Length: 409
Image (cartoon, rainbow, N blue to C red):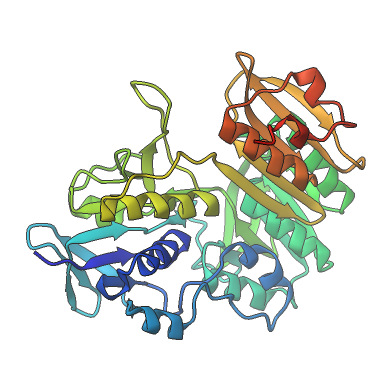
């Protein structure tokens, strides 16, 4: 049987697993397959700094020299197209067949489309990868107005970036508040106020229909029954797990590639990590809660778990999920997962623009959302790691640092 470890996907999970395998002395057994023609790069800047600077280059995770020094084989611009599970081989678009002992799917997620709106239209964009960001950036100098369909993280990050560049920006969100599925009403209200203060036109509860096309361009939408001309549109209506390869190979898929606690799929020789996988939440009970997380932190943490599975080492401690988003002057950081029906307690920050929201469920601290309060965020992560729940009244005393509730030893 081959001892080769083949990783499909050059996102954060894939390259982090390469780094972990190299550190474990397994670089020479490792192959990384990337559909994109460039080395793996940092993705968070694509919606911010990369868009602002026309000459800004991609920030590579690792250089070509590093991969070569570690003995890792990299296939760029040669997508994986099929898995032969019986022969334990991965077929690439070029026709190459790579034998594997263990295959790791880190295929990520793709932008959700809204037919007939699609990025094939000249003035309609999505933002998931470098190609998307480069295409959007090229339109910015001549762009007069940007319409963002969707009030989630990516859409709002791009909206804030475009507004900072002096563009007229409008955000259309079907829900009654921004980021409704991800953050508390308190945080939504603050973000809404911040974006409106920056000159962004927010339309909540927006019903969009009546798409008007001319050739390869979107020229207008019907928004709440009124015709609205479109200059440039960004689709920011969420993402879908990239399961095409896994599903075609007969692996179990349900809102992602289904994995067990050790990230193994329904085939014991295949793992899945990162945005593409649906995993059981550690410690969530005999019938575990399953979820799919789209975050850099989750990708990095799951790479560590995958290393343990691949090497037979003990798994690391279950991580506390955390997320972040920069939207202009607003820096959001979230630690833990917000439970439904939690008791919310607002902790004032050092300035009117900073605060944290503490979520308590059954008397236990479950999640902390922080706005421009990085020290609160770091302390919250540590409190959640230790399973500590300071009394809300004491924890919300802004004169007392949140980290003071963490034992010294």
